[in-house]
Length: 99
Image 1 (cartoon, rainbow, N blue to C red):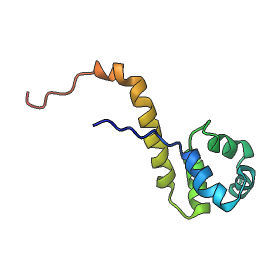
Image 2 (tube, one colour):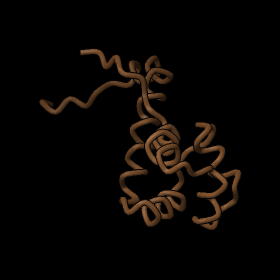
Image 3 (tube, rainbow, N blue to C red):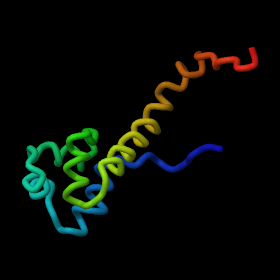
C-alpha cells in the first residue's frame, strides 16, 4: 500500500493551526518563547526543523507536549528521507532469523 499523503512539516502545523487562528506573528511567538525571531520565522517557513529546545518551549506555551512537536518532526523526516534513501536501503540485506 502506497502512502499518497504528502508529508506535513511541523512548521505548517504551527502556522496554520496555531499562529493564524491566534492572529499571532512568528515574531510575537518568538518573544513569548524567549528565542530569536528568526528561529520561529524559519520554522513556520518550513526552512528548519523543530529542535528539542523549541519543542519544549512550544509545548509549554501551547499546553501540548514536547513529544507532539518532536513526533511531527520525526514523522516528517522519515517520510521525506525514505524516498531519497530507497536505493541504498534496497541494498541492505535483512537479518535471517531462521538461521
